[in-house]
Length: 178
Image (cartoon, rainbow, N blue to C red; front, top):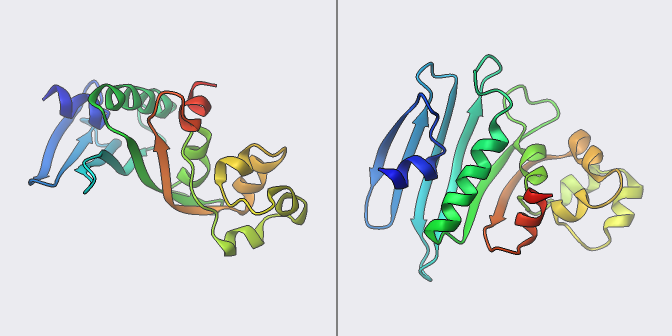
Protein backbone atom coordinates (compact mmCIF):
# COMPACT_ATOMS: atom_id res chain seq x y z
CA UNK A 1 0.00 0.00 0.00
CA UNK A 2 2.80 2.46 0.89
CA UNK A 3 4.42 1.66 -2.46
CA UNK A 4 1.19 2.49 -4.30
CA UNK A 5 0.48 5.69 -2.34
CA UNK A 6 3.92 7.26 -2.62
CA UNK A 7 4.57 6.25 -6.22
CA UNK A 8 1.18 7.21 -7.58
CA UNK A 9 1.32 10.73 -6.16
CA UNK A 10 -1.65 10.16 -3.85
CA UNK A 11 -3.70 13.19 -2.88
CA UNK A 12 -4.19 13.72 0.88
CA UNK A 13 -7.94 13.28 0.51
CA UNK A 14 -7.80 10.82 -2.35
CA UNK A 15 -8.17 7.21 -3.24
CA UNK A 16 -5.89 4.80 -5.05
CA UNK A 17 -6.91 1.85 -7.14
CA UNK A 18 -4.88 -0.91 -8.71
CA UNK A 19 -6.63 -1.32 -12.06
CA UNK A 20 -4.39 -4.00 -13.49
CA UNK A 21 -1.66 -6.21 -12.09
CA UNK A 22 0.22 -9.00 -13.81
CA UNK A 23 3.78 -10.30 -13.80
CA UNK A 24 5.00 -7.48 -16.09
CA UNK A 25 3.17 -4.33 -15.00
CA UNK A 26 0.87 -2.64 -12.50
CA UNK A 27 -1.60 0.08 -13.53
CA UNK A 28 -2.52 2.54 -10.77
CA UNK A 29 -5.07 5.33 -10.61
CA UNK A 30 -5.17 8.08 -7.97
CA UNK A 31 -7.99 10.56 -7.70
CA UNK A 32 -9.01 13.30 -5.30
CA UNK A 33 -12.41 12.74 -3.65
CA UNK A 34 -13.94 15.59 -5.64
CA UNK A 35 -12.57 14.11 -8.90
CA UNK A 36 -10.89 17.36 -9.92
CA UNK A 37 -7.37 15.95 -9.72
CA UNK A 38 -6.35 12.54 -11.01
CA UNK A 39 -3.34 10.57 -12.16
CA UNK A 40 -2.68 7.26 -13.85
CA UNK A 41 0.65 5.45 -13.60
CA UNK A 42 1.99 2.21 -15.02
CA UNK A 43 4.87 0.51 -13.26
CA UNK A 44 6.72 -2.03 -15.37
CA UNK A 45 9.93 -4.01 -15.50
CA UNK A 46 11.88 -3.74 -18.76
CA UNK A 47 13.43 -6.85 -20.34
CA UNK A 48 16.84 -5.74 -19.00
CA UNK A 49 15.41 -5.79 -15.46
CA UNK A 50 15.10 -2.01 -14.98
CA UNK A 51 12.03 -0.80 -13.16
CA UNK A 52 10.31 2.07 -15.04
CA UNK A 53 7.21 4.15 -14.34
CA UNK A 54 5.09 5.62 -17.11
CA UNK A 55 3.02 8.64 -16.05
CA UNK A 56 -0.02 7.90 -18.21
CA UNK A 57 -2.01 10.99 -17.27
CA UNK A 58 -1.90 13.76 -14.69
CA UNK A 59 -4.64 16.38 -14.55
CA UNK A 60 -5.33 19.14 -12.06
CA UNK A 61 -8.51 20.97 -13.03
CA UNK A 62 -8.63 24.77 -12.75
CA UNK A 63 -11.02 24.64 -9.78
CA UNK A 64 -9.15 21.91 -7.89
CA UNK A 65 -7.81 22.54 -4.41
CA UNK A 66 -4.54 21.13 -5.79
CA UNK A 67 -4.13 23.81 -8.48
CA UNK A 68 -0.49 24.94 -8.36
CA UNK A 69 0.67 21.78 -6.54
CA UNK A 70 1.82 19.76 -9.57
CA UNK A 71 5.50 20.33 -8.83
CA UNK A 72 5.01 19.15 -5.24
CA UNK A 73 3.35 15.94 -6.43
CA UNK A 74 6.11 15.35 -8.95
CA UNK A 75 8.98 15.96 -6.49
CA UNK A 76 7.39 13.51 -4.04
CA UNK A 77 7.04 10.96 -6.82
CA UNK A 78 10.67 11.41 -7.90
CA UNK A 79 11.99 10.94 -4.37
CA UNK A 80 9.84 7.87 -3.76
CA UNK A 81 10.79 6.27 -7.07
CA UNK A 82 14.50 6.87 -6.47
CA UNK A 83 14.12 5.19 -3.08
CA UNK A 84 12.43 2.21 -4.77
CA UNK A 85 15.24 1.82 -7.33
CA UNK A 86 13.23 2.95 -10.36
CA UNK A 87 15.54 4.08 -13.19
CA UNK A 88 13.34 6.51 -15.09
CA UNK A 89 9.91 7.98 -15.59
CA UNK A 90 8.41 8.08 -19.06
CA UNK A 91 5.44 10.04 -20.35
CA UNK A 92 3.76 11.43 -23.42
CA UNK A 93 4.03 15.15 -22.68
CA UNK A 94 0.83 16.23 -24.36
CA UNK A 95 -0.41 19.60 -25.47
CA UNK A 96 0.28 22.68 -27.53
CA UNK A 97 -0.30 26.41 -27.29
CA UNK A 98 -3.87 25.88 -28.49
CA UNK A 99 -4.73 23.01 -26.12
CA UNK A 100 -7.25 23.91 -23.43
CA UNK A 101 -6.59 20.64 -21.57
CA UNK A 102 -2.90 19.70 -21.63
CA UNK A 103 0.28 21.74 -21.13
CA UNK A 104 2.75 18.89 -20.54
CA UNK A 105 4.68 19.62 -23.73
CA UNK A 106 5.88 22.84 -22.05
CA UNK A 107 5.60 22.04 -18.32
CA UNK A 108 7.32 18.63 -18.07
CA UNK A 109 10.63 19.83 -19.62
CA UNK A 110 10.67 22.70 -17.09
CA UNK A 111 10.71 19.96 -14.42
CA UNK A 112 13.51 17.98 -16.09
CA UNK A 113 11.90 15.70 -18.65
CA UNK A 114 13.80 15.48 -21.92
CA UNK A 115 12.57 14.25 -25.26
CA UNK A 116 13.04 14.49 -28.98
CA UNK A 117 11.89 17.46 -31.01
CA UNK A 118 10.40 15.97 -34.17
CA UNK A 119 11.47 17.36 -37.56
CA UNK A 120 8.10 19.03 -38.22
CA UNK A 121 8.28 20.69 -34.77
CA UNK A 122 11.84 21.86 -35.35
CA UNK A 123 10.82 23.47 -38.64
CA UNK A 124 8.17 25.50 -36.78
CA UNK A 125 10.74 27.06 -34.43
CA UNK A 126 12.12 30.53 -35.27
CA UNK A 127 15.16 30.38 -37.61
CA UNK A 128 17.53 31.94 -35.04
CA UNK A 129 16.58 29.26 -32.50
CA UNK A 130 17.03 26.52 -35.11
CA UNK A 131 20.52 27.85 -35.82
CA UNK A 132 21.47 27.81 -32.14
CA UNK A 133 20.23 24.21 -31.81
CA UNK A 134 22.61 22.87 -34.44
CA UNK A 135 22.11 19.13 -34.82
CA UNK A 136 20.52 18.68 -31.39
CA UNK A 137 16.84 17.78 -31.17
CA UNK A 138 16.71 17.64 -27.36
CA UNK A 139 13.98 19.67 -25.67
CA UNK A 140 16.28 20.31 -22.69
CA UNK A 141 18.96 21.63 -25.08
CA UNK A 142 16.32 23.96 -26.53
CA UNK A 143 15.36 25.12 -23.02
CA UNK A 144 19.03 25.97 -22.40
CA UNK A 145 19.09 28.47 -25.27
CA UNK A 146 18.02 32.06 -24.54
CA UNK A 147 14.46 32.32 -25.81
CA UNK A 148 14.17 28.54 -26.20
CA UNK A 149 11.46 27.99 -23.59
CA UNK A 150 9.38 30.79 -25.04
CA UNK A 151 9.84 29.47 -28.59
CA UNK A 152 8.76 25.99 -27.50
CA UNK A 153 5.73 27.34 -25.62
CA UNK A 154 4.64 29.18 -28.77
CA UNK A 155 5.58 26.62 -31.46
CA UNK A 156 5.98 23.28 -29.67
CA UNK A 157 3.61 20.39 -29.19
CA UNK A 158 3.46 16.80 -27.91
CA UNK A 159 6.73 15.17 -26.83
CA UNK A 160 6.08 11.51 -27.52
CA UNK A 161 9.19 10.13 -25.78
CA UNK A 162 9.56 12.37 -22.72
CA UNK A 163 11.85 10.76 -20.13
CA UNK A 164 12.98 11.77 -16.65
CA UNK A 165 16.28 10.13 -15.63
CA UNK A 166 16.13 9.33 -11.90
CA UNK A 167 19.92 8.89 -11.56
CA UNK A 168 21.26 11.05 -8.74
CA UNK A 169 23.35 13.44 -10.87
CA UNK A 170 21.35 13.24 -14.08
CA UNK A 171 20.47 16.26 -16.14
CA UNK A 172 16.82 15.68 -15.25
CA UNK A 173 17.60 15.89 -11.53
CA UNK A 174 19.74 19.00 -11.99
CA UNK A 175 16.90 20.76 -13.81
CA UNK A 176 14.34 19.70 -11.17
CA UNK A 177 16.52 20.89 -8.30
CA UNK A 178 17.52 24.20 -9.91
